[in-house]
Length: 178
Image 1 (cartoon, rainbow, N blue to C red):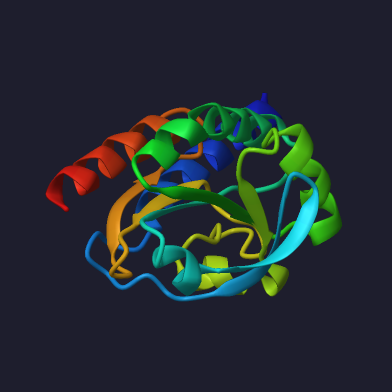
Image 2 (image 1 turned 180 degrees about the vertical axis):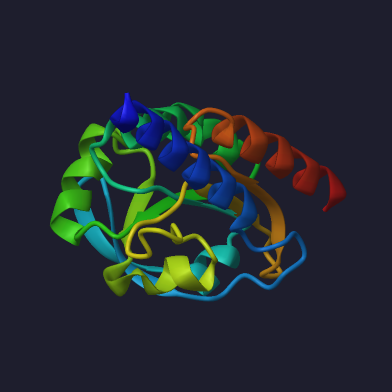
């Protein structure tokens, strides 16, 4: 019983901290470059270069190949063509190593979008996307970054559900304003 209560308490603490952590809409998005992979092929991702092509959906997730992260990757993979139609690029980011992400980009991301390795959790810290209790692990936070480098939308929830829908709506609204 004590273990069950402790688990519920930890879940509530993590959920509460998730809602508090995130950059605000309108804040400048910190620029970064990182090792990434799409379709199992490694490359150097640059936020600044990608923003020249249009908005970026940057989503942070805790760990590749875990249940929730795999579900979320599948959902983003299914929606990638919709994001592309809106001119947006999707990239996921975690503290996993590039070898793991090469596999994850094929199996979970279904060769549809890139995932980046955040060595040392530096990017997640700059985006206020690190779990407070486990600072080396990302919280589940999604950002839409406009081509001018500002946060256009943010969605923070430990549940994989809601991220894709929220970012699609935000990308549609951003495109309508441009």
